[in-house]
Image (cartoon, rainbow, N blue to C red):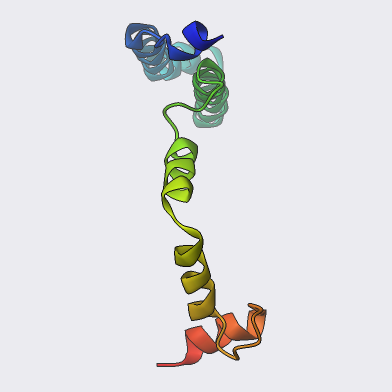
Length: 114
């Protein structure tokens, strides 16, 4: 599993797919003008483009199942670097009424105090 996790996906596959979808969606209005009403062309192009690019984005997310390139990995790194004292200090700064709990009113107090 470690070998699969560490093997990068070639960028050329994503670039090729993206370029093909872009070329297709740019040429689609010219093909549709003769076949359908000119008023329907923008709607058809927008829906088709959304489906294609959404599918491409889903594929991109599936290519990286372990989230090695995402901000999730960054947030985990930051969480590991923060000590317990750092976290307690941050919560104490949010606790304006000093009852060792952070309530919505504490956040409201922080937002309304100049």
